[in-house]
Amino acid sequence: MKRERKQKKGQEDTAGVLQEAESQDGKEGKKRSAVKEIMSYVWAMAAAFIAATLISHFVLINAVIPSESMENLLHKKDRLFGCRLSYVLEEPKRYDVVMFKYPVDEETIYIKRVIGLPGETVEIKKGKIYIDHAKEPIEEDYLPEKWVDRNTGYTFEVPDGCYLMLGDNRNISEDARDWAQCALDAGVTTDKKEAKNYTFVHKDKIIARAILKYYPKLHLFLDV
Image (tube, rainbow, N blue to C red):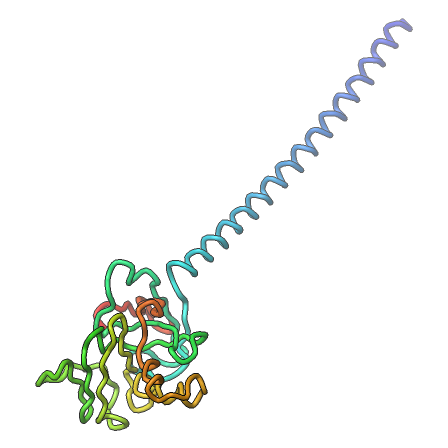
């Protein structure tokens, strides 16, 4: 009888050890599962951050409009995306709305409309724009009001590889008509002849083409 009691007690003790080991294994398993779940979230967030960074640096630019110079197409505080890859395989076209480094201060990004193409002569006469001495002006049905300020007496010879940019809201826009003087006023140059170089935007300074306004209203830029 004593021997049976000892065997029974030994079995109970062993069972207790096994149950305790199983319980410990269960806790360890839950910890490992929790760690795996946390790490999966961390990796997902890291992957999302890396993807967003790559897209921001190489594919899209997210911008907020700071002024009224592109009304009525773009209003102050509008938000939009520009595509950085738009001109990898093609050249900017007349009327494209583009983001670029401001010639006088390349730390600043401007958004304007492409008006003059490389090698063209662009004349502004009485609120109309003529390309290469054409008899008829280009069509500009996007202007928000009658163009009366600084609307005549300009002739631009666009250098190769460069573009002439103007804002849509011509009466208040600071654009190619002003940048030579802006360069002189900012002390970037003291030579009036050299200052004219700041009138134009080199292709490699164009950052992106506007493709989508998403705030406050959705607008896809196709033929703008």
